[in-house]
Length: 87
Image 1: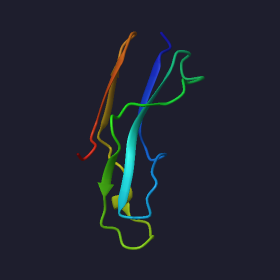
Image 2: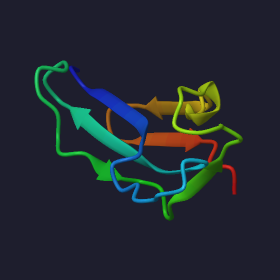
Image 3: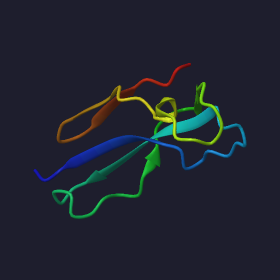
Image 4: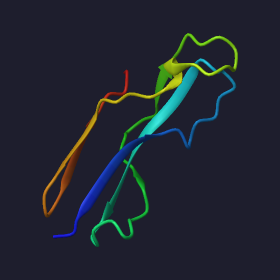
């Protein structure tokens, strides 16, 4: 039917000086035209989660990456998202 749903981890609301804390939320958007355009993104997580790392300094550190554990199931009328948020 042209519906495309998307869910992702997002750090747009992240404000912290501590480089070993990565606050994140989960957002959702949908398209009804096969992905040519999407609705505005909507925060679906009830609270901001924080991933704590053991990175040293501001150098690149793979531990700052968010999780791959995220899922989305949808049909013509609704979608259900599931994710890991370390709480």
